[in-house]
Structures are given as structure tokens and as C-alpha cells.
Length: 225
Image (cartoon, rainbow, N blue to C red; front, top):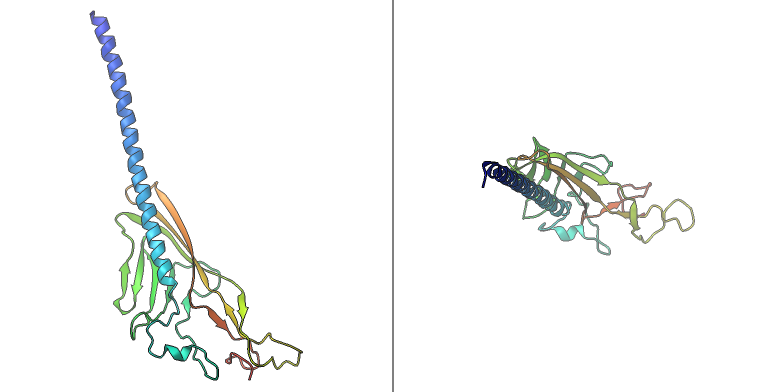
């Protein structure tokens, strides 16, 4: 084998090694990016699932001793659900925090909630304060929006009397049930690779529907007297 043939063989071998190395580096980079994408997606989905599950409880009575007093029965007067309010209110505008109450344990109603705080999502645990929900060392939350979905009343509650408007068969003053739901949007960015960005969305319907009193004569009464 001549010196020229040896040099040509070495050059071809170097090209093959370089191509193989480039391919290996590319595959390793793609694999690393895929792992980061999966991590960000899983973390965002887990966070959205927790927020969805917890927010669904807003306004629930749970362990209240006198919860029977808030369930309507014939001839009885039921009290208002003082845990019903959810902030932000149903104005259709996105907010970076949400606060609500629910009776989970005896004598403990909250407040509970979630907020965006310097690239991480915090979870409020009543008197225990705030706890970090996302790992700031792995993922940075760039967007966290809670948007109330404005929905019309879907069901009218029947009363024993018609409205006192003088209009025949007028039932417009009867109370109605309004479904409450919120849209959750979370966008996260990988700390290890800022180019990895993912977004998850979820819509949660609150179990505690809102009863709207529509009697203009007595706004605090459910039915006309």
C-alpha cells in the first residue's frame, strides 16, 4: 500500500468518524430536548390537574356541622352559602391569582387559592399560608391566567307563587341556577433550555352552582311571598 492510498484511507475514515460523531451528538441533543419537553409538559399538566381538582371544591360545605341548615326543604328557611364567592369575580377578565373558600375539615374554611409569584405557582393552604407548587429550578412559569367563563343561568327554580307584577303567569322573578366555570391557562419554560416552552389549558366547573335571586320586590328572598 502506497503512502497516497494510506492517506486517502485515513481521510475517508476521518470523514466517517466525523459524520458518525455529528449524528450521535444530534441524537443526544434531540433526546435531551425531548426529555425536557416531557418534563415541562408533565409538570404543567400535573399543576393544572391539582388546580382544577382544588378549585372544583370552591363553595362546598363539606364538614360543616350545620350543613343541613343550608339545604332547602319544604317549610324550612335555608341560609345563604357564605363560602360561595370566588375571586376573581365572573367578569370574563383573566387574573394571575384566584382565592376561594370551602369547608374541608371541621372549623376550617380557608381561604384557599393559587397565584403566580416570580416564575412559580404558589398554593394557599388556609392559615398555613402559601406553599410552592412548581419547581423553580426545573421550570419557570411565564403565564398563569384564571378566567371566569360567563355563562347564563341554565335552570329556573320553581316557586309556589307567581310574581307580583300583575302579568299573567309571570315567572321571571323566580330564582335561577347559574353554572360557574373557570378556564386555567399555564405556560412554562424549561430552565435548562429556554427554547422549550409548553402551554396547557383546562376548564373546571365548580360543583357549587350559584343561586340567583331575581325578585325585584324582595331581592333577598328566593321566592315571592
